[in-house]
Picture: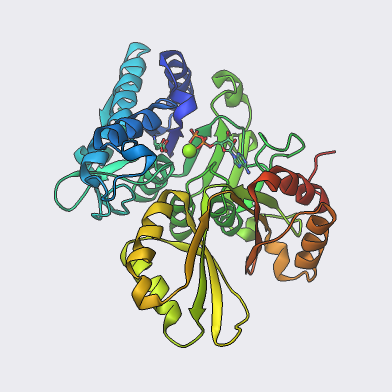
Length: 426
Ligand code: ADP
Ligand code: ASP
Ligand code: MG
């Protein structure tokens, strides 16, 4: 008997009908003799609604459109937004019971799935699966509320947006599951977001490293942390569609139904570039005329780090008369806080002016083949130049090149690079 973790995202549990469909997928696996744990997200749109209520309660939209300065209590945010998954876990358990499958729901605190105290984006510190496993071995499906855990102060925590993927992978690792199936609204990982480029095609397999770059550069099909965890723990993750009829899936080998995220050496054929990712959720900050001397960068970035604000791309101009400009990007969600932190540190840093913009996009080409092929960057920059797209910043890793551009050109840039690297489906 194998042990499977199945995860259903928001659109796959968007209403009771969709939950019934998810239950049919689960039943197929149970009937095939697998022990199953199922992780669910909240119904599509529900978490956004809950976040809006938190912001309204705190008065974020008051103050003539300016945000109120201090942040609301993140523990209460978690108490509110975790509730969406409580609803779907209970509903799926009820539907499973109604079709004769033994099932019960588990909230994060009941397992318990413990996390650190970084509310709103907590990290999982442990998954105590003994009790859950005992139930599963008795033939009961464990329906687990994704996205949530319990923090050190015994308070409900959440794992950051898209965090149910991470709940599923963490559970699969703790249960030593044979596979973690991520059911979503696309039938796998594509060469780029199929909503933007209709010519995108599905990859049969993608390496953990490439998937990690794709996710962290904006392909939200899997939460970045879930891929990190899958890679560390060697969890086989299969991204597949809940929209395929449940009975038909049974006829095919499971791994032919989607994209398998696995070790690089399990992939035979490999393009130089495997995929193009894009993100529009970053904002750009520029500090004008700061002193070009040792210690200034630390004065800029230490207070941001202290405020838990992640900085992504950084560009420093050539120095003139001992002064320089510094541009960097942060998540849009952190933009206002970053500006506030920098204004407070103005005296210590000593900049002449502070500018910011969120009308930017980051477009990335990703592929393990870049390790052994020169010239990918130059091809990429020439193709963008031909389309008149200006590059504002560049960052690279061994298997990725990212450029920062005007948001208005994001889709054109993605389509251009997708064709350039031979990814358009024929
Ligand atoms: P879920 O609610 O199931 O967690 P998400 O909306 O979080 O689903 O993720 C699935 C979406 O990810 C798809 O609908 C698709 O638009 C988007 N996406 C972005 N990049 C990719 C990609 N490279 N491959 C597949 N889907 C992608
Ligand atoms: N419901 C949460 C969100 O919308 C978690 C998830 O869907 O993975 O972010
Ligand atoms: Mg998701």
